[in-house]
Image 1 (cartoon, rainbow, N blue to C red):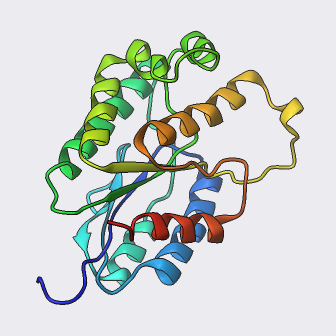
Image 2 (cartoon, helix red, strand yellow; image 1 turned 90 degrees about the horizontal axis):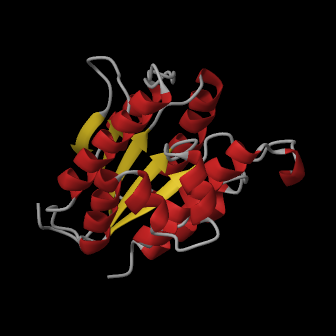
Length: 216
């Protein structure tokens, strides 16, 4: 329907994660739908990993359908190897961007609940001290193409690390954990979004996300 003011468009993408992180994700995503999903907004729930026949939810304005899809996600890691994990994620991300690109919305928000962007650790480490695009162009060209398409079609990616704030201090994180968080922030910066990593401040993050996607 074209009645009423234009709403916002969201895709909530659920990536590989532990059962504990899936439980935490269901909590803060429920908070997002219940507090910030407007009557004219549209959203879908999509998995970037394997799921059951009832996994996910097509685009809808019904918050209860979205909540049901979120509650059905149990978490789990499906990749057999780092290479399969990267291939599966890149394929799923590319399909997501291609799905969202032609949608008639001024701005499109992809809320990506993920622990990391898979890729070669050495390249990610080098990219931190050079240009940010190197992370994607040299790690996986197909992923770089998908990111480029996202920027051309006003698709902003908002990664959310499901673990939130931990009791560890940054100095106690291993290198891979730091790179995981940096990779999420890098993807957000390249597409005009922002990442929520190492924080439990979901309310402020979701309020900012809604503000950004209410400006046309």
